[in-house]
Length: 181
Image (tube, rainbow, N blue to C red; front, side, top):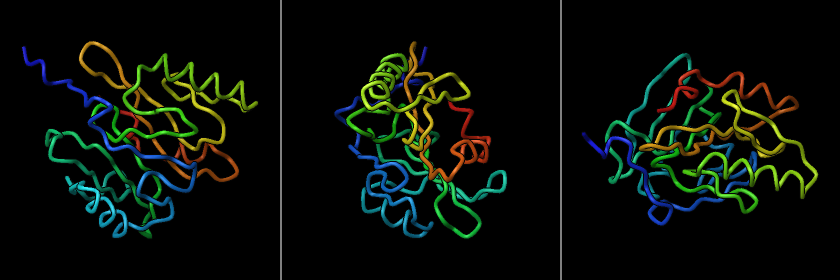
């Protein structure tokens, strides 16, 4: 049996990014265009793994040397005008992203959910639930999901800019985002 099929990078081996909702995600600004994103991630040693169009979206998948060729660490989806719309950070190979002191990526989903609930209680914000039942705090402008990693699950996250109705960005996201493995 191939035990490396579902491997996961330890936190210590991941790039460390900070997320400011709707503004900055690590080295990325949420108002960047495709060329800027590719150049910025190249400086941070992320190579373009693939790019193209899927389901009406332009996309670029990024990986580092340590990541198997079939798995992107970061996926960026762009509007027709080239503006960044969504950034998906993989739970097994993506950078660790911290928002308000909460580590979001590669976490056991129940532990992350408890931290989100604690934050929401302490800061008097609401909680939202993803289609898969994972919770995240109002105002974080992200959606959490879980994917298989060996015999357990780890968290991944989708980052976006929310307008007046935060459900719109989620509902408009490319369908491929919701099918993580």
